[in-house]
Length: 70
Image (cartoon, rainbow, N blue to C red; front, side, top):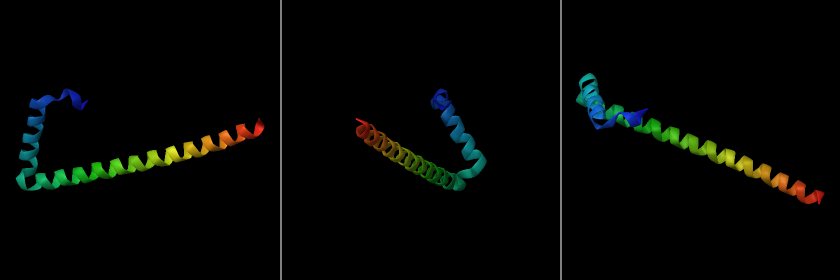
């Protein structure tokens, strides 16, 4: 969706944000958006690591069970 915006559309969005929020509020909004994205990224990283850990545990159990049956 965002790939279709292009440079002119991005400039228009920034100008509208500047008009609506003003030059004093815009840096605060950008900082808050950056922190939100950072937290989201960290959360998804932790979820991915947890899922990989569980998958590796299951693989180890399956590998050990298949080794014992032989």
